[in-house]
Length: 390
Image: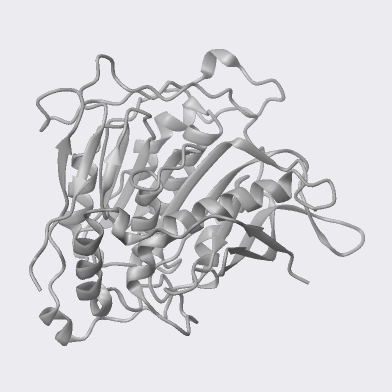
C-alpha cells in the first residue's frame, strides 16, 4: 500500500501578498492557453479561441537592495561519477500537505534482487523534485524522467491536487500554492530517506537537491526560488516556464532554462525575461522552431539534445562534476538549438573516469554575474507582475 506522510504547512493565502490578485487575474486568462500542456501525445494544439485570452506581459524586476560582493553558491564536494546507467525503479507514495493530497511518483537508480523486487541501488543519490504542467501528471512525464534516474538521480514527481490531469476541482489559480506543495514533498521524501524502516533509507543526499518543471511546473520551480524560497534547492531546470513573481536574493542558485522559440502557450519572450533579469549563474537553451512541449517527446529530434544538456547541468550542480560543466555547451550545441550561459566553463578534459575517492580540488564554485540591466549588483531583486486589465 502507498505510504502516507503528512506535512503540516499552510497553503499560500493570497491576501498576504500584494501582487497575488494580479497573478490570479493573469492565471484566469491563462486557463485556456495552458490547458493540456502535458509533455506526451496527450498535449494538443490550442483552439483559436485562446487568442481571446491574452497572456500577461513578462514580469519586471525591481532592485530592492545592493550587494557589496557577488553571490556565490557554497562549493559542493564531488561524488563519484556513475560508471554505467542504472536500472530504473518505480514507486508511488501517498503524500499530503494538510488537506492537499500529493501522490508522488518516485523514480530511482535500482538493482534487480533475487526476490524479484526493485531495490534502490547502493549509495546516496541527489534528489530532483519535478513539477508537471497544467492538466499534466507524473506519468505523462515519466518516460522523460527515467533517464535522470538511470544516470544516478532520485526523482520525486508529485501530482498536484487542482491542476493535474485527473483533478476533480480544476483550478489553475492554485498554481500559487504549488511551490509550498513541492517543498512539502521534498521534506516528506527526505523523511522517508531518514527512516530505517523505508526502502529509501540512506539513499538520498539531502545536501544535493534540484527542482525542475515544465510549463506551469516551470512556474512552480521558479516559485521555489522566489516568493516560496526553499534554500535546500541548489539548482533548477525550467522547461517552457517563467516566473509569477517574488524576489531573487543573494543566495545564488544556478538555473537552466529550456524554451522553444515558437511556443504559443508560454511565449518565448517570457522565459527570456525571467532568464535575462536573474542575477545568478544561468544558462538558456533555445530549441529552434519548437513549440511548447514537443521537444520533450522521445520521438522529437531535439529530445536527445535537451536530455543530454539537462543531465550534464545536474551532474555539474549536484554531483559536483566540473568536467560536466565543460560538457554542457557541447551537449547543447546542435543545428536544432542555440545555447548561451554564464555558468563556469570548467576544465576541458575528456569524459571523467569514475573514482571511489572524490577530489576536493575539482569542486566547482558558481558565482553570480550581475544583471546588465541593473544599476548595481543586486543582492535582492523583486519581481512584480503587471496587469493587463480585466
